[in-house]
Amino acid sequence: MTAWPALFILIAVTAPPVEVATLNGEQHVGQLEKLTADEVVLKTPTGSTRLPSAELLAIRIPGAAAPAATESSTEVRLVDATLLRVSGYASTAAEARFTHPLFGELKLPLATIHSVRFAPPDAKVDSAWKQLLARTSKKDQLAIRKSDVLDYLDGVIGSLDETTIKFQLDGDDVPVKRERVFGMVYSKREVSTGKTAATLDLTTGDRLSARTVAWQGEAWKVKLVSGIELSVPMASVQIVDYTLGKITYLSNLEPRDVKYTPFFEVVWEYRRDRGIDSHPITFGAKSYAKGLSIHSWTVLKYRIGGDYRRFQTIAGIDERFRGNVDLTIKGDGRVLFKGPARIDQPPQPLDLDVSGVVELEITVGYGEDELDIGDWLQLADAKLIK
Image (cartoon, rainbow, N blue to C red; front, side, top):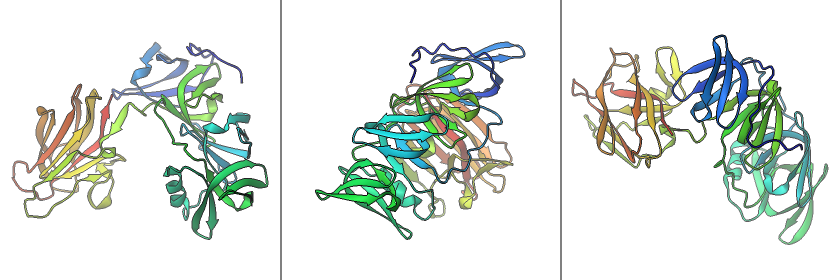
């Protein structure tokens, strides 16, 4: 592939409108003029808008086509968490070869391949396949489907072509018919996203883990974390997502300490990413995929290590209930916010400075009625921002 500059000062001649979301909650719409490692420049009716790349959450391309059905495709997962839907997968001891609908024929070092799934997705065995992917094994693994059960063999995967996989089992060379294999996982290939600056979701259903992303004329120039360089047509990108590493949702963290003080000796444990009775976290007509539901009296303590700048959430009571609570948020013992949340109040957006804070503490008290009836506080979209 043709090499291209690492600095990525690349200017677009023409481009469709894009929507840009930033960490401070702003939304910008305009024509993409330039994207570098340092900034994005949009052409708008009032002139050019320059936004620092460090403040980006996402670049969306409105009207991008939804992923096409590709049930017959082979799914290749790279060690950087990139997912590619391809055809004609084959390999030697050193190299993997396959064809991609956007990138044509690709030849990648075998060391960049984490796993390959030949069979289409199936809810009956998808969970077992995910568990196999999560394992760390000293040997390669071949996944074999038997009815609705996914079994696997430990050994050494050799070369494979359209019909046969050469496999070493207990020291013996065993040719395995490819049609029998659901998928395969290479040994000692842990998935790492540590250097990922952005992920790109494509209309083909692929996901690219990018170390760098730039815009050049009619295409995105993407360098994957694994070092592979790709040119992606503008119309093939749905979203460039910069949230990885910048945002941590509180519901994805384990509290260092949880303390409950029940009023009627009934403990109501806090809930992640759901409201009451498994309903989504909801305020009015709007639902949120991420957040916490916390009953009074509860104290949650999180160790956030001084790594974040802001804590943002929308705090309130689901209008279906009659809650009345006090909310106190502390950083290293210092009160960052203290106030009531009642059913007759609208949800309150919070944006708190947590720079240097090592321990974040959230306390939900009984409120002015000093009871716990209906006291489910919702912290919608609760997130820490670097």
